[in-house]
Length: 129
Image: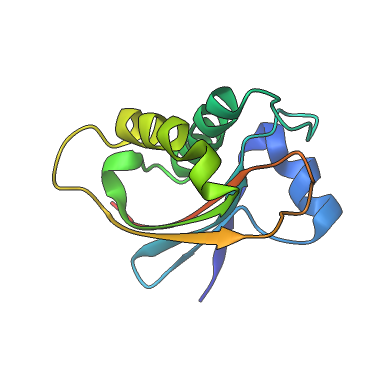
């Protein structure tokens, strides 16, 4: 069984591109990739602010499902120019997950994302409460 989750302020974006923000199934929440874009879909220009916005958007989808970052068990991040921005990303990630136990994490370098101004996409799996 599949139950979809949409944060209200972002539902139009998900409908326009034909995917769910997250899906509840089997006691888990599977979150689609979140990026550092505002409500209009515009990428935040500053890399550090963009990474923080991506984690803020991740928190928004989690909250729509009654979860938070403490429920995240698996994170996959997709990075454009990973080495150029890794310190800024690491700082934003540390703010999101400040204390152990940390979720497991896989980082993947990519050539680009759907918008040429985006530098990061965060995909996650969380346990449902």
